[in-house]
Length: 172
Image 1 (cartoon, helix red, strand yellow):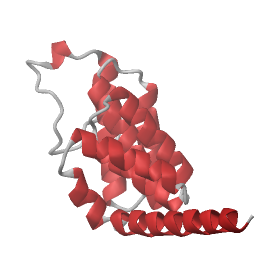
Image 2 (cartoon, one colour):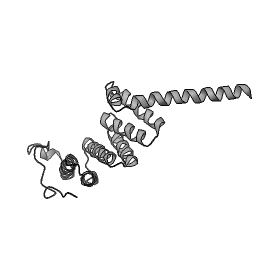
Image 3 (cartoon, helix red, strand yellow):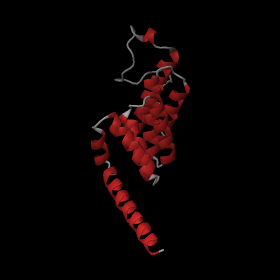
């Protein structure tokens, strides 16, 4: 298992922390949460999803007032959970990200894919509907992830069930 790259208050290189002039605009918790996000990103890049989840969780617990940052932390943790097969946790974190930023397309896509993995297809469709309301580009994400084929299969199966039920009641 990998460890953190350095002390908790040491920012990762080449990341988008606020510059010193704008640092006064951010509270200490926000700065620390961003450091944890960057450390989580580094762990994620190494494939160390457990440590990535650890850092994202620490960032979330900093209770930053910055909703955008908190939404990113939840979304990043959702992706790490997804990579580990923790699809329920992934869906929950995507939901938390959407509560903070209802137009966060990446989190919407993550929620949809987690629902597909959980075989919660109706819920996945709801997530996709949210995504399409946010951006017409969502369709490309869903196509890329094979979600549209699943929806087609679900629709076909639903129609077949409805036909079966209808034909049953014709004879009753």
